Length: 234
Image (cartoon, rainbow, N blue to C red; front, side, top):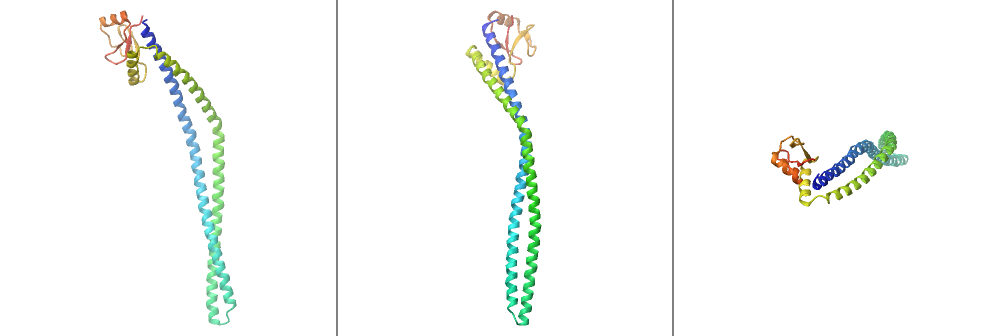
């Protein structure tokens, strides 16, 4: 077999090895993405729980501040009532005191309701924290395995690319350029032997004179039908 053919076939073998390793490397991504999606769901739930708790705690602070204001008003109205001797003024002060008591009672009841919601929100947040911790713990082994596999493939890929570079140097410049163009277009095997006088890729027959010339000189030609590179096998 002609040296150009030997070099080109070897190069395609190296390219196939590189592409296989690159495919294996890409195949790791869906596995990682699935793990990340599961974690993201738990992380989103945790953030939502934290946001709810923060909002409820703020409402509780505001409600307790209002309750304190109403109790202060109630105490002031009580002191005013205690210092009044006029019946008419006492009646008015009593009405104000009763109103302040109702507002203070309502504010206390509202604070109690919000405090209960705060407790519920805190419990949900704690549950969300436990959930994400469990997910991360369960994923640790698989993530470690994927990381180890990635490192192994990347190391193999580094060596395969080095071998590919070495093989490419043994192919003449014009032939290498033609090969690279064909392989980029086909994204797969691009070099085929003649088989029974026809292209082994698409079975298109080549003229007899052309076949003889390829066999005599070792020339590598392009199939006019499917565009692959063809060589005459021994």
